[in-house]
Length: 267
Image (cartoon, rainbow, N blue to C red; front, side, top):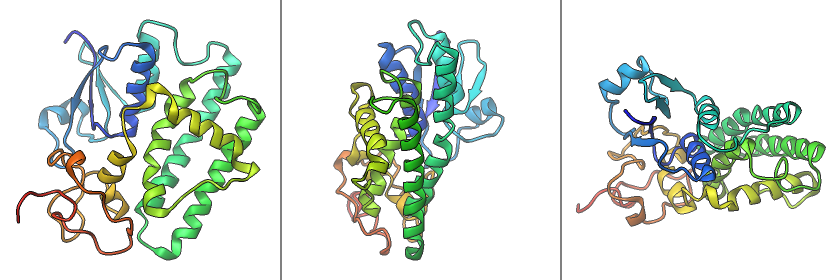
């Protein structure tokens, strides 16, 4: 093996963090990406490498050593790749960006719980939970760079961590009609989010792709699991997502059929 290998799901936000880093460094081929089909059982050879765990991405170094957890892999690549690192070199500034990155876990969890929710009575509470986290991030950005666009002067490590989640939350815009209020408590984070999503190094996925592939998540079935009454996951590679129709927006209605979703050909 001449370079690191990343085993991943192409649409996975945690893998996109690594792709963003490579794009920013101008080294898209520094890592070999090997696609894993999550609609099928894991390859025993891969499970042997990971000691039975199935979470992705996983990085295998050129010496055959295994690294797990996307933030660990992101920081590792940031250190070993040629060029200036994304992380802040100043110890205090690195501590600040680390504090912001620590907010990503609850933020991500709130968004995924929201999209997978099947109880209409919980929608308002889940919406408020996510908005509260946005307000918290807004306050953090106002404290550390109130007049800026990014956390510091340019797209950095915190932006590489959060941007894939901002883009995955397109599924909330589509399936839950989610939007940030046009109010001062959200103005700074809205500015940051927009700049992150518009950055040229973050265009690995599209809104159409996210909405189509994450339809099953919106019905409460994640990670390639099957929705009741369906035989094909929305995460299958074929038929291609580009060739499928847009899914119905009403996630609280019964699931559209495999055929209606463009997941099968013929009868």
